[in-house]
Image: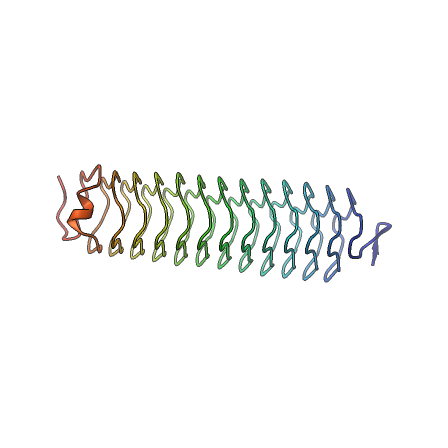
Length: 272
């Protein structure tokens, strides 16, 4: 395959290549160099891009559905509006990449490095981030329903006004994160570390936070109705105006909270 005078093949040197709007579905580009390449609105469905170097490349609004992009270097790439439905990006470095408003449903990011990435407004339905690094990532206003963040590091993550219903965060790290106003209905946060995490006004109805570290966590006005907090550490937690109706939590646990003013207690009484 030759496009704009460039041979599309494994290990090709396509540095700064002009490939905008190119149709390269099922292309074999394993190990290719695409540093700074322009792939704007290109079609790369089911392409083989493992071990490629795509750092600083522009693939805004490109379609990379079903691609194999494992162990690739995609640092600081521009991918606003890009489509990665069902793509495999395991072990890929995407530090500071921009995937704002992208469509990444059912994509896999196992053990990937996504520190500082922006996925604001993206659709990540059922995506897997197991054991990935998302320190200081921005996944605000994002669809994270049914996502798997088990064992992922999300220290300092921004996840404001996102939907993460039925998501899994078991053994993940959310320390210093801001998840305010997000919907975590029936989410699993078992053994999750949430030191100084902000859950203000979150919906955590029927969520499972068993054995979680919730030290100094902010649950102001959050809904924890029927949530499971068995053995969770609530030392210094702010539960002001939170709804704990029918939650599985002991009064001994609640005695360690820093604020309970206006809190609806598990038995339906309001703490004064």
